Length: 412
Image 1 (cartoon, rainbow, N blue to C red):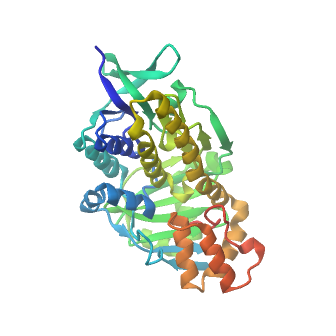
Image 2: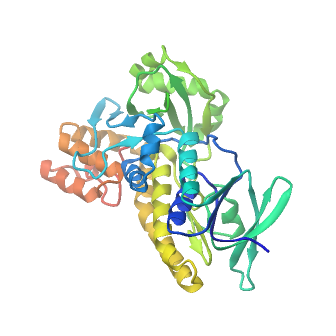
Image 3: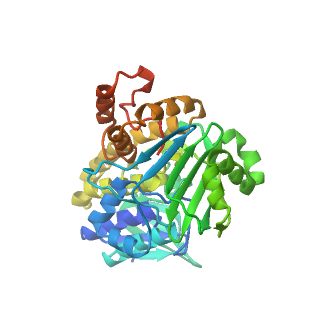
């Protein structure tokens, strides 16, 4: 007889482990599987914005992260051309801390928390097919673990298995919006580098330094049309971008040591897939992905997991009510993610550089506006608060007003 679980989650990194943790804490039987072995790393900016940290704190996971030795990030330095703005989120924000943990630490902590909550966690397990009812509703999944092939039944199948999601393919989830790729990115890690959270926005490249476990991640973003050129010698391209856009950081890197291989991709897809259907849902990159230049992936995955479980948990045993809640999740996911998506497209666009530089210059003299800007970027406060304060401070040209549909086109 096949095992039955209330929830089966495919993909045990941030999105999937968060779903499993929250569902198990609601008393549901949960199976969490991943094709990878753990602990292991994955392509990531590592950065978690303050709303994500607030959720980890609420879930009781943040203490484990702090105890892992991940450094706290409390200030941001952003330079665009000759303009520098420095600061932090507002002191009255509901969360003021951010962190950038290595993924082999964060993903493992979340999966372990899910297991402690009662979820069954199994790695090196591959999803292969879906078991369907007569009405075509997914009611189970076929898995392979080594040579063994078996199936389990479930009330809800959750795909949290990334851009190339097997679950999304098996349920035939359509893409509902797609935009062209804008950037490519390469990064690595340096030991002995004295750097905080530093961002440098240049006309031809963007550079970021992010403190993480026992190292500093240094990344360089380039326009997508340069990908073939960049990947031929990514080390040189990154070093040249740092020297050009962040010469002071380059000087500090000269006495530091790169300790890992280069990580990178030219496949920075921008899309929404249908987030849910009868008996299934997608969370994280499996359902929605945007350019990583705004470092929103982890934060957004955590938010989606909380949204999904909060909606479906009370009705998991009622297929009709469950499907209505899944439709609500789809609408809610799109509404929650769309402002940051559109903002990211603006941030990544090289033709918006002058606009970003001019806006930075306009707010650089105000500590209040700088903090409000960082609040909006983090997702702590709506952009209309920054707009209202900006308009009181001076009469700006319309092009300099912050967007009211999401974050402004400045990156931070």
